[in-house]
Image (cartoon, rainbow, N blue to C red; front, side, top):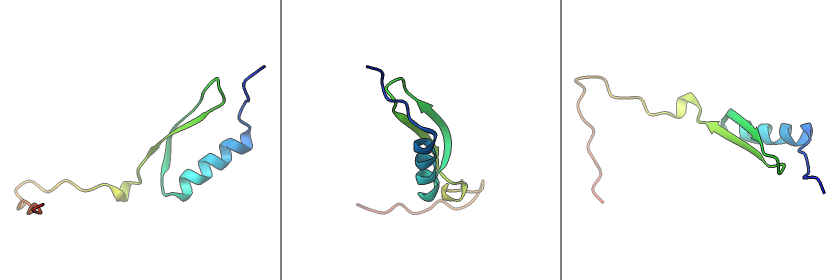
Length: 63
């Protein structure tokens, strides 16, 4: 018995779900077993900017 192949519709649903979650698709892989694997990259605005050189350091919260 052959492994099921994902359809184009299934791949579109997966990509749409990733985009609705606010993620962008970095890489997509379809395994021989029919599994769809997507590695997502976070949106650019979600990254924390590095402090400017010479800027004061932030306080650390005490546990």
